[in-house]
Length: 135
Image (cartoon, rainbow, N blue to C red; front, side, top):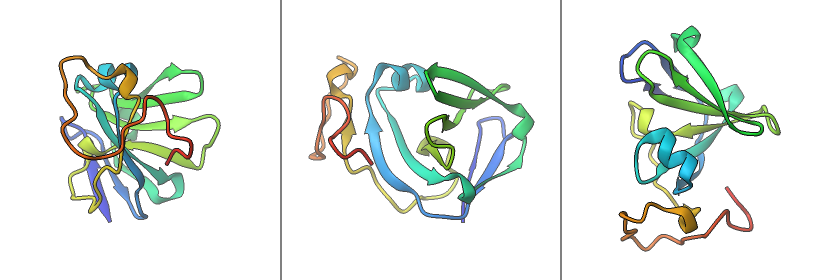
């Protein structure tokens, strides 16, 4: 069981299944939504995700057609993404986890639009956009 929460503690969630496809996304939307050089994210089955507290505090913003980013309306913490094209999977920013997910990023995506002030210094594979078989 993994637990996560927002900065103010008003929203809490649990994940009962495995995380998949952990990666670092450098696209401009992730950078702006997270106020950082990139967003580390994973996928989780919607059936394995459960709100424990404060689901009513979660507000969604459609950042691109069919991609709805959920965040705490009190403190602004990014919590998950829902997708119109696949309601059975959520995108999960790992920064809101309270527990160690036991997994690390496998690659960098959208490096063609990475922050010019950030240098990627690890040896993970880098893709200008999504790789041919995106996790």
